[in-house]
Length: 182
Image (cartoon, rainbow, N blue to C red; front, side, top):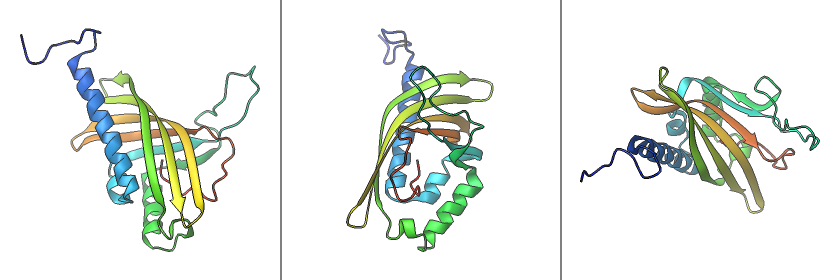
């Protein structure tokens, strides 16, 4: 009997289980960095060609199956890595009213599923659900519920995210600002 079996009883390979663990630990680490406001370390988790995108959510008739806008539609957020770096630099000045004082933020992550793989590019897709709770000052509390689709890429520095698509469940955002990182 060997220490590691090549496949589990369900047909899932050990390599696939190890990848699942690696991705989950990556995402938990990311959530921890955001909770500690370590935005420079967080930004390093992304590739230089990043697209960080949140389409506008619209309400549709129940007869229309399309409930999320396409990637070329108007977006709440459509950033690249340099623009995210500018957002982080603004927070670091202490003059960003939405982040002064810094809010208390928790990112709760669940339903991590590894999807399609592109072996030639060394990339794969990961979907997850996220609940973000942000508390600021004495009486401000915001919650954001969303699904994310991330495109992971293996690099010499380890896993990195090259694309993040965030789809909020809310079609109307009641928060006073959108300074939270998803």
